[in-house]
Image (tube, rainbow, N blue to C red):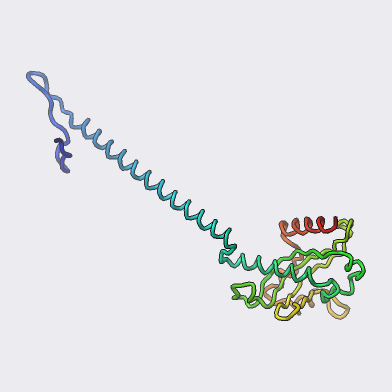
Length: 224
């Protein structure tokens, strides 16, 4: 049996016979031994990395499957999305003339004949610490609603747009739109309705591109 030499000990032997000169093979043997050890360590490290990658991939897949099945991720972003969906539902079910602040600008005959489709951008909600959409009482955001009449292109549709406050504490929910009046300029009306921390967003009257694209798609579908 050949053992591995102890530290500091020669790792090979002198070879030779008769009158032939002895050959020192210790260096060749040490190099071979070192290479074998290095290869073994490298293989083991590679195997560990492969198993780590497999475990991480399995964990990620499990989380994604659970999210898809339950529809819940626990993220504040997801709650904001749920609040936006509820906001859209309330606005679309509310007759345009009852959007407080828009009534004077809506043709009631046309509104009655069409379907309201909306897109929103949520600034925030109260209570700010709510973790379920059912706990939200007030929503602050920007809305763009269009009244889709059959055969009417988007550019010709009546549109309701601006910062909006949704009071969900009553039945039905109350809608207030920040719009200029004869007595109050637009910016003052925004400051009156929207908390200071959301006012910068309120003056940016726009939807994000994805929301706008979806709103146009829904409008075209409703106006067919």
